Length: 155
Image (cartoon, rainbow, N blue to C red; front, side, top):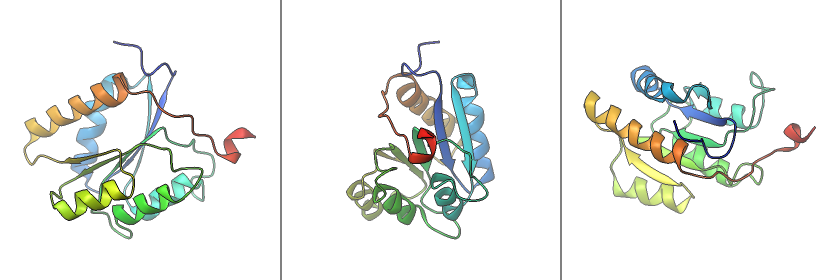
């Protein structure tokens, strides 16, 4: 296994409401378990609470990477992306949009708001697994992450 981004662990927030997709992503990332600290929330509202370290997430770390679905209950991924990129303490976090939408308007909007990449989920299991493997090689094996620390973590 290659050295992981010159950091001991990569904190990743998966924002995904589909239990099957979340399971596949978590299972596919299993080979990185010693170097990956993976958190999962299933709504946009929970994602914002997590990122702002609000109840019920007062002691969680700030993620190095966010995997964000667009089609979420309670608050959609585009509004979550927009709030993250408008928040000084969070705006440098790379965000990978991982969604079923292949609409060009969604793609353009996400890039306009600062998404790092936009990936349309394949519909079949084999292609989905291959996609996650290629993402993990890139994001967990090659990318260098910015330093992201909020006031709570400096204490």
